[in-house]
Amino acid sequence: MIKVALTGNIASGKSVVQGLISKMGFLVLDTDECAHNLLKDNREVEKTFGTSDRSELAKIVFSDKSKLKKLEEILHPLVRDEILKFFKNNSQNDILFVAVPQLFEAGFENLFDKIIFVDAPYNLRLERLKKRNNYDENYAKLRLDSQMDSSVKIPKCDYVINNASSLDELEKNTKECLKLLL
Image (cartoon, rainbow, N blue to C red; front, side, top):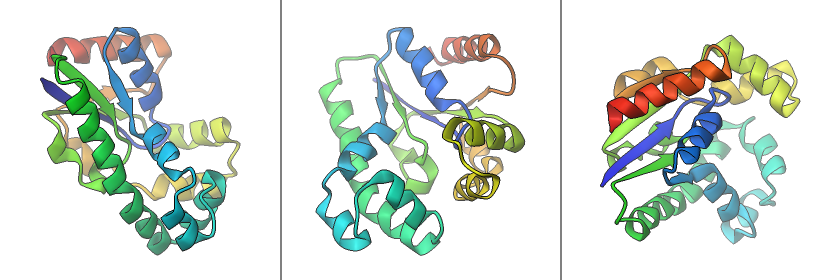
């Protein structure tokens, strides 16, 4: 079984690529969704931050790096367990994909055989994030800047899918990447 991580910084188009891969018939675990589910009624998170509500937590942790680190210390081991469970429960598959936005930040890269990075320029991601989430410029930059820079991540990846153009081009780039992978 080939274990493939799909990663990229916020608003790069990971979710779109994830959807394309799913449409092609491959299983994809979404660790963002896992993390959101793990937050629900999480007593340790509520005790530490006074809430487990995603939007309230985001305001707390993205304005204070030490609080973000604390949240990650709580969630990352739980997300790691979900990834390992996904691999075990689907071990009959030849290839499995896991969408992991925080792959390198969480230190999960060693769980995978191959890594695909979805890339888009900073300014394009900034505009996408502002539009998609209705964030003001400062908060959008705060969210973008909370992640490790793509220039550090890309050299650690096996494949890069460029998402600086149209949806048709992204689909073409994704299919080309999967041909190389398979």
